[in-house]
Length: 170
Image (cartoon, rainbow, N blue to C red; front, side, top):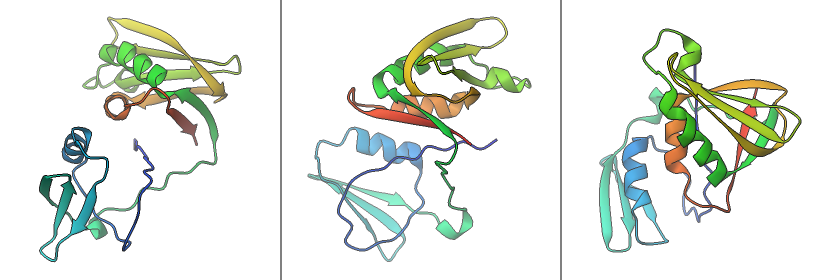
């Protein structure tokens, strides 16, 4: 089972390149950053220097050749959420999941999105059950299981109320 999150950020790129960073560490630094402008620069020593306002961080960089670049296909059916409503739905259901269970379905949030404009989000660990509905645009034509770890990461990334989030099922 593979899961991934693709985030698009607008910015000015002086010279293209790629770097492999620890996601949680970068998220914690950038989340609390007071500046609206951030500079990322890779040094010859293999460190990423992140500058934001008066703050500067030196982060270790791993070789990108050791990890394949994930492909995020937008070919399948998709649904669109208001990001704050999606965050609320995740927070209301993810606590009931059981990541350590050998039963696959208990380790994530089931999203059942039909053509009625609602997505039913359900989480259970076999003893507890939590369910909530979210208004959506689009239809998946079935159910999707979002792994609990990916759902928690997505919930922590959602910041604004006016943003939208999309879920694809390939």
